[in-house]
Image (cartoon, rainbow over all chains, first blue to last red):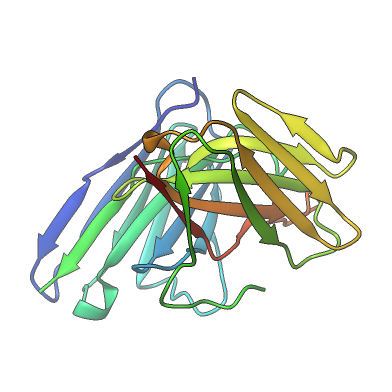
Length: 116
Length: 113
């Protein structure tokens, strides 16, 4: 149980394009979903936390107008990278949790975003 | 918080040996700890967790030890297999309001056949 699916797994697009990444919890209802960014050889850095039906909470330094997050249901959250540029190229990973902070987060397999 | 480096430390072990991966966490208020395994091109996979009211927890072939006095966490893998080769992250969280999971730097485990 606790499967999280992320789509697409890889995106290559031109600079200026907006890219949407989907994160779905397949076999449980996710009260909270998280979006992380990971650069090569580095750890995961939290970008934002989203709760179903409410606005996402962004970490310091993360532009909310650049990284749009929608959490419309208990099984789906989306991250849209607007007007992407090469510096936005990274590995984006979502996770979902059944409850509050004392529940483990279950991670998707990430989306490799490459902006040309 | 954790500093970020460009090179992850590597632990190389012989297949069949036991592995011990160590982690120093940063927040003395953290009360829930998780070990994740990340294979190349994939997301982190939950391995085992431990709460701060415990100092040891065992799973299948894995054991997590917690020393709150020195803020140290370790993951022991028994009879290490080639499939255990991956990057391992410890993560900590304080389960109070507005808590967030903080990941350690990560350690690469390389298993020699």
